[in-house]
Length: 128
Image (cartoon, one colour):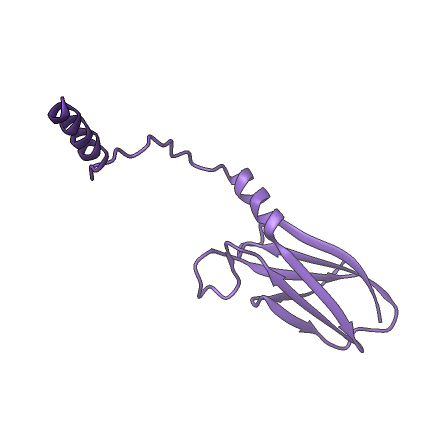
C-alpha cells in the first residue's frame, strides 16, 4: 500500500513538472484606423504657455514622429493664429515669437506630411 501511495505521489509531482506548456489560443485582430486614431487622441498631450510676446508649445503624441528619426507615423504641426496659418513645425516643441498684443485664437493641428489630418488638434485662446 505504501508503495502504491508513493508511486501516486511521484506521478503527481512528475506530471506537474513538465516543460512543454501549451500556449493559449489567441486571436490576432488587426486594429482599425479609427481605433488607432482614437487611442492616439486619448494619449496625445499638447501644452502651451505664454511668456512676454512669445508662445511656447509642446506636443507629446505617442506613435508619431515629427522629425522622422524615430519609429512612428511621420507628421508635422500646423499652427493657426486667429484662423490664419502662421507656421509649420517638424519638432515636438517650438516657440512662436513676437505675437501682437491682444487676445488670440490658436489652433494647433497635427497632420501627415501630405497635409491630411490625423484628427489631433487643440484649440485655445491666449492673451498677450
